[in-house]
Length: 122
Image (tube, rainbow, N blue to C red; front, side, top):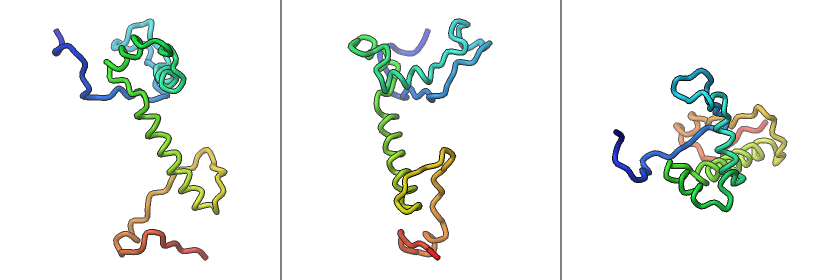
């Protein structure tokens, strides 16, 4: 027996886009081993794979807690925010190297009560 029936919105289903079902795992049926679940979820979210014009399939995923736009919208906002920071740091040039990471804000300036946009440019 499981818990009570019906849908539960307690936890959203968030599958990382690079998740692949592990092979030889007793937690997964053998026919799903090495299945690119993360890529499929991403394609469902962004391209409507398997669910386009099929409300029953959409509803089945929603009952599992599938997030249609939450991750994508948040991801887009993070991209825009990070791109704006990079652009400001590099003279409004948005030629971002693949390995670039947004640096953590300097803690020292905050503790000393410095203004938010203060910069040392020499």
